[in-house]
Length: 108
Image 1 (cartoon, rainbow, N blue to C red):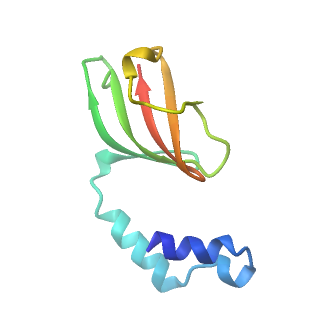
Image 2 (cartoon, one colour):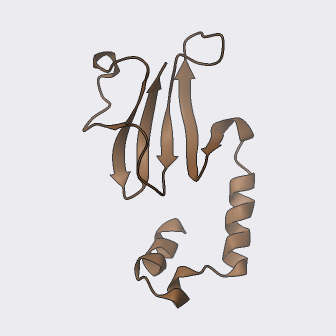
Image 3 (cartoon, rainbow, N blue to C red):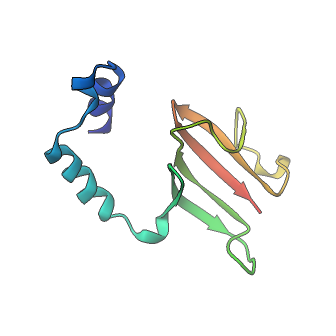
C-alpha cells in the first residue's frame, strides 16, 4: 500500500500528491492497530520500536527499530549496525533503508 502511494507522491504533481480520504482513513485504521508502546513520535519523526533491553532508571539501555524522518535525519548515519559494541554509548545511529526511512539503534 505504501509503495503504491509513494509512486504517486514521487511524481510530484498536485493531483498525485494528495491521498484520497478513503486511503487516509485506511492508513489511520491500520496505524491505530499498532500497540502504543511501539510507536514514539518526535516532531514529524515516527519511530517504531522493535527491540530494547538493559536496565536504566528512565528506560532501556538500548533500543532498535525503524524510523521515518521527513526532514534531515537526527542521528549518526552509519553503513552498518551489525557491530553495536563498536558504537559509542550515548548516541543514536541510523542506517538508511530508503529516502526518509532508517533502522535506528539508540545506545544510552
